Length: 204
Image (cartoon, rainbow, N blue to C red; front, side, top):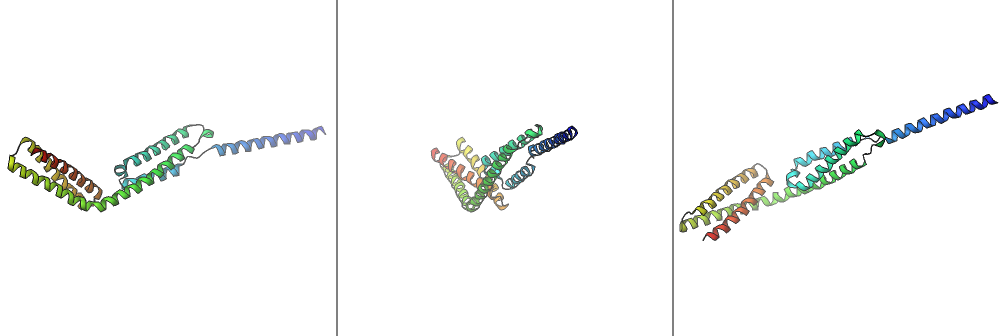
């Protein structure tokens, strides 16, 4: 009887040890959080697409915020990898990546809209830039005929020469398909030609 009791107790102890071992193994497996490497790769791939849309220049605030969030996720993932495996958690990393991804979507859409808008406006902007610059040059020629070429007029003439060069560059960019860059240059010519015309009126 005593021998049988010892066998039962021994079997119970062995079963208890086995259960404890299995439970510990299950805890270890469940506690080993896997880093979201695939998700990180997806977001970084989206950055490459955003770069082709020139988001860094067209929508710098959105692009920069998305980049900062991705960098923070990368840093946090590296930090988690150095911690004890049962304490690793990548929840914050995934949230940062999701936030970065959503910002990139918004940046891509916004950049595409800007390009579309400039494509529609570049023709009128080109014409306006040419007319504004031509008007400023004509006004300067008229003033110089009446009053001669003063030092102030020489400086303004130099500004108009620079604008002519910028206008020619804008035309070259437009011919090369760089619509956004050309439109921005035309806007610069318009604004500065308008400012020069205002200064010319004051010289009379």
